[in-house]
Image (tube, rainbow, N blue to C red; front, side):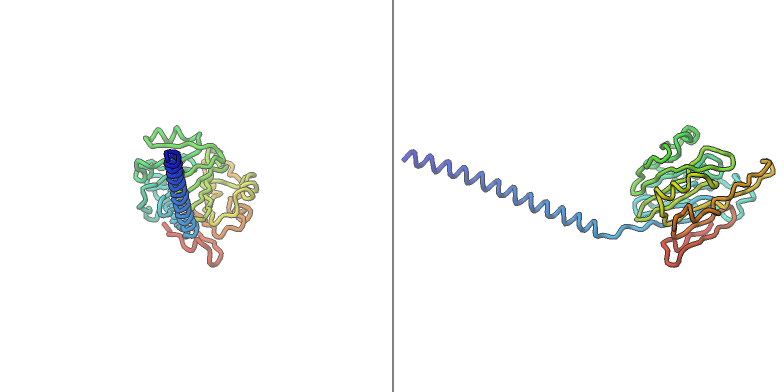
Length: 267
């Protein structure tokens, strides 16, 4: 009888182990199924669309529900004095994640007053690595990146690409992706030899913000005959839906009917 009782105890232990094992497998399957269902709902949910607002001078604000990006924001009226005739656009953001992209450190593109009004404890001022020390000297939290080095800012991804202005100053243009869109902000760049490569590698863009440049200053002689970047916009944008030509007092928006960038708030 003792042998039979021992066999019964062993069988009971095996049965309990099998029950616990089967229960664990069932819970794992249910948990996995729930996770897959949540992932499927996430995949099927609409992507929050990027919103764009034209700010003063060359400034642009890009926003999705979680994050705001300001590119070259300007609020200091002393930078261009009487040249800035329109009222300066106020800098507002409702997101906790807010960051600034700087194309270069000329005062009409890097305004410390604007930067300090925007930033919070979560913010970075992002620039080319060679400009980082200049911006940091203004007491700002800086992240310097190398050319073509992508950086994630909240739900945006930003990439600096080459730019060349009439002074040969250190600068970049910015590619910003988020909310299912990809835009190009060119800063002060003129036409240069890298556009074909940029277009093939990163295009097409949903919108391109381009300078109305080619300005000729009396204190710089002889004036350059290099064509403005907008003269080559088709090769730059590679079928972009819209391109916004920006200057101090006016802007022109060219877009395909039904394009995403249906309207941009004017300064």
